[in-house]
Image (cartoon, rainbow, N blue to C red; front, top):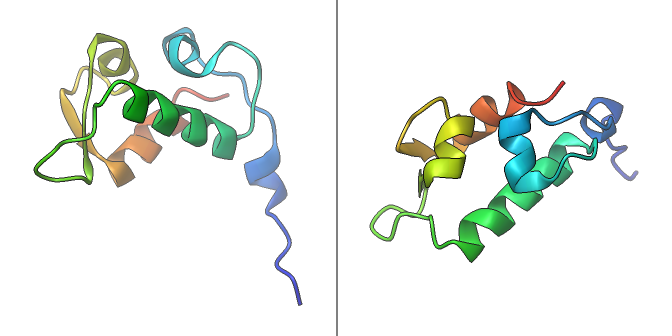
Length: 85
């Protein structure tokens, strides 16, 4: 039996102005926002070289991460959720 996608994850949410700088201003599902965030992190080489689970924020991401310079992947998901409504 195939797993059904959770409709809550597929609901399009509006990104905050801070997050929109990274993922765009169009409403999008949480999963898409996370995917675009990872594309941005990889494109700008923001993944910590020593500990790949950590993200070193640039000025744009710092505003999304509540001013933090470094966050881990799990913390990132939690912080990004605050920017989707």
